[in-house]
Picture 1 (cartoon, helix red, strand yellow):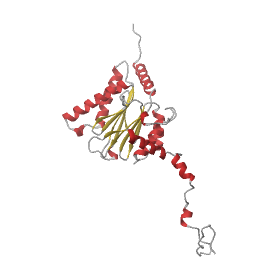
Picture 2: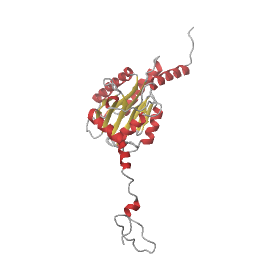
Picture 3: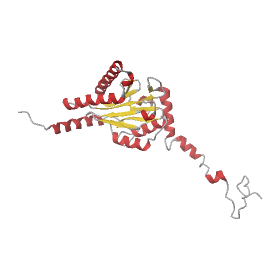
Picture 4: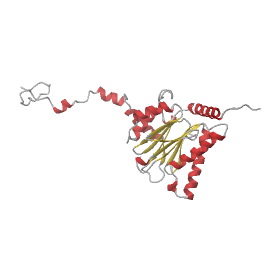
Length: 277
């Protein structure tokens, strides 16, 4: 007779297996900024993308096994195209795609002997920042509605902690990239190397575009953003040089010396700092 294993134990074993597979990779970060939504993921490969476009204003980011989340991406593109063709392009939303992904992953997790070792994010750039949507879908089909930022894969909890400390509403693209790079260097997620354009995959959903908002940041533009983000970091060479020139003027220096106790104005000071005769 076959060995009996309780359903609870089967589900637990599947979940542990999927979590271990996802944790072996590096994390990815999605963060909202004033002009849209930024996606950042360490990826030295130029052929295998972790970040892709799904529809007009919707993008997809994933970590885990490439062949598994690539199949999910293709299926999501097909679902979005068919929905937009049968009904209306405005009926294709990040919420609808996230729910569809949740159904597929939940069914695979329950019925298949091996669950997908993937974690994905579906994000949509709205007409305004308040209309932006970010959804995180895990290997078992659970959906989380994220606000402002999200981290997936690797040591996602540590990465999310750093993002929470550095995130603020209305961030510029440079500030958002700086926060994302700092979060990806969180303890346990690998040491932060001197990251170059060849080691990063970066894309944005630019809400200022009227139709297809997705675009990749590569080459000169990405190098410029990396240089600006490093210069904006506390303790950077630019800030250190500014501090070396001397401390900023205090309020007293700008206002002038206080008046004497008798109420008469203080005599003007000469160039040497002493009172003029």
